[in-house]
Amino acid sequence: QLQIVESGGGLVQPGGSLRLSCASSGFTSETYAVGWFRQAPGKGREAVSTINRSGTKTAYADSVRGRFTISRDYAKNTVFLQMNSLKPEDTGIYYCAAGTTYYAEITAATSGMEYWGEGTPVTVSS
Image (cartoon, rainbow, N blue to C red):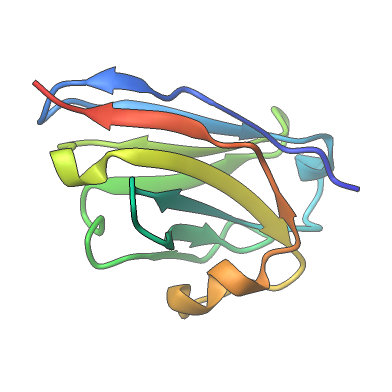
């Protein structure tokens, strides 16, 4: 069982930035593709961004493209999600998940990931 721990969430004003971290001992090698997902209050879980096992391919939801950046650091066992120009509609619980398949079609990633973290809350509000 792969253990995944997210961190970095918090309260930020509109237009601000946050960097989320997703750590796992399994991220030291090119074994897992990783994705970030979010769930707003009263809504279903949606895929935000994915990165492939080698870190050479990424995909983004239309709603975050150009504002969010996913990256991975194998030495630190961590995948990051840099979130800039945050909007109130970005509010939600952000989850990190991993699996052996990379989903370039991001809408397919939510049901395909095998291991999930507990989530970290992000609130964008003035």
